[in-house]
Image (cartoon, rainbow, N blue to C red; front, side, top):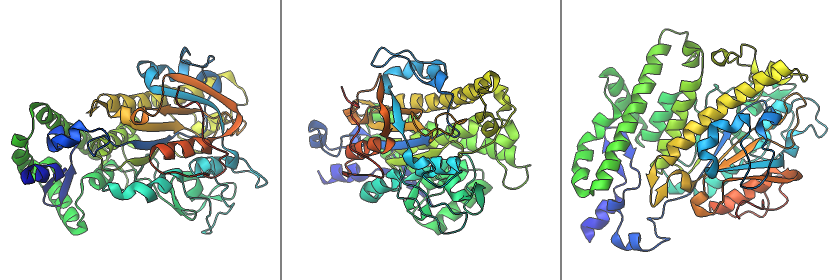
Length: 449
C-alpha cells in the first residue's frame, strides 16, 4: 500500500531545472478512488476566457433559431463538428463597457470591463482602477490547488503605460485579467516563455540554467526528464503507457514548432515575432492554444485567459485578403464590402477556436474528454463595432463543465441581461460561490436543460 500511495503522488517528471506535469493516469490512482465518484480521481473542472477584439458582424454571427435545432450562421460554420459541445448565448450585455458619463473610449472599456464587470476609471496615468476579474477572483479561491494559480496568454505584446483610447491608459486596452482593481495581469505573448512557465522548475536559478543548456545544446525539455519517464513506465498499464507516449510526443511537437518560429524570427528587429515573418498570425494563435491544452491536460492550472488581439487592434489580415486595419474596418458605416471583411476576420478567429476545441475533445480524460471537463467562454466586449454597441454581445460557451452544462443549443436572453450573471454561474461550477459579481443581478438561467 505504501508503494501504491507513493506512485499516486507522482504527478510530475523531474530533471535538472525541469518539472513536467503529467496528465491524469489511472494507474497512479488508488483502486478505492477509482471505485468511488467524487474522490480525487474525478477530473477537475477548468475555466478559460478567450477574448477577440472589435466586436463582430452580428448578422453573420447570430443563429436565427433558438433551442437545439438552430443552424450555425456563416461565421460559426467552422464549429459545425462541435455543435453539440457549444452554447451560443445571445442577449448578454456589458453595461460597464458603455460611457456612463465618461465619453469616448469604448475599446478600452470593452476589454477592461469584460471580465471585471466594473467601470474603469478614465485616466491615462498610473491611477488605474477597474475591478478584480472573474478569473482572478476564482484563482484567489482555488489557485493553490495547482502549480500555476492562473495562466494569462496573448498574441499582442502588452502595453501598460500611455494613452491608447481617448484618455484611457493602454493598460485598459491590453488586459482583460486584473488581480486587483489597480493591477492587471499582462498576458504572456512569447510561446517560448509561456512554455517555460508551464514546464519550469520552482527554482528560478535552475530554470534559467536548464533553459540556457537546452538552447545551447539544442536539447529538448524531454531530454531532462527522460530517465524519470523510463522509471515510471513499468508502473503504468497499457492504456496509460500509450497516453504517456502521446503526451510526450505532443510536448516535443510543440517544442519543435516553437523552435521553428524562433528561427523564423531570428533575423527580425528585436521585439518582433512570428506573424511579422509569416504575414499571418495563425501559427502564433495555435501555439498558444496548444500550450493551454497541455496546461489543462496536466492540471498545471484550471484557470486561464487568452487575448487573441487587444481591443482597438488595427492589424490587417492579408492572408485572408483583408489588407485594411481591423479597427478601421469595424467602423464600416454599413458598407457591405467592409462588413464582409469583418465577417471574414471573425470567421478566421472562429476557425482557430475550433482548432482549440478539437484538441480538447481529442484528449481523453477519465470516462470522457478534456473538453467535457472544461468551460471555455469566447467573445468580445463589443457587438457591432460601428455603433460601439455593448449589448447582444457575441458570446459562446464550450464544454460540459464536468457534466453541469447542457450544450448544443442557442439560448436568447432578455435584452441587457448582464454578462456578469454568467460569471456568477461559472464560478459556482468551479466551487467559488458569490452572491454578486460586478453588475450582476443573479445567476444565468438555461445553461442546463
